[in-house]
Amino acid sequence: MLQPDAGSAMIFLSLIFVLNREGLPSWYLISGFSAIILFFLALVINPLYIIGCILLLTLIHYFRNKRISRNPILYAFIFLIISGFVYSVNYVYLNVLEPHQKDRIDVLLGDNVNIKKRRL
Image (cartoon, rainbow, N blue to C red; front, side, top):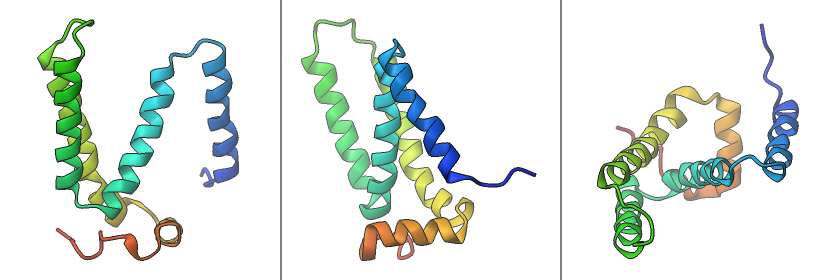
């Protein structure tokens, strides 16, 4: 049985920076950091506000960026994936994370975690 080892995970995660330097596309790194930021924001802020901001940013990017070929289906698909991720944070925090992981997040965010108040 594998044991959880956060130290090894951090070392292997740091290899992404080396691979990025050697030619790994930057969108891997950007999407990973975006997922982490969205996870913590969804713990602190109501997901409807986050979805509204993401929708606004998506529409602004779609209408302002005329240099690339704009595919509305791709924009809608990315928006749906982000929306599903933001709404899944509640389930992941309550049912998937171990108690010690929840305690670490609670210590990191302080009293700002609203997830316990809005149980579905």
